[in-house]
Length: 137
Image 1 (cartoon, rainbow, N blue to C red):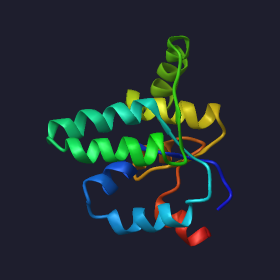
Image 2: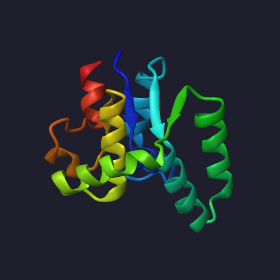
Image 3: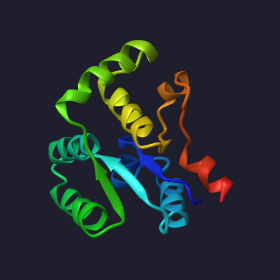
Image 4: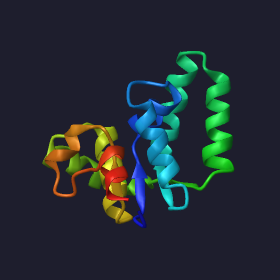
């Protein structure tokens, strides 16, 4: 693909919870394995909250080890001083905080936002789904 991509929380959850689009996410990750991939600290914590709620401790540990620590995924975060910019995005595009956070980072870092969340379609930057990226490669 050759683009720098920010992977939204819902993409990882499709994979980790083996949901409907699990095969598409696997294909996407396989086709982009040599590309730089990014995810946010917010995504890591959201996944951690959900997987511990479901008592999927081993899945969480594997994700952190395989993707974050030993994988090619780079973790991005914000400073508290950046929260007002995230709030402006939430207000301007009618997004919730977590979507605004993802969108803000994708803009700040000039990354393609990879998500199944159609709320991003209301923004100028938009989003790409794993399926769209697969067909582009």
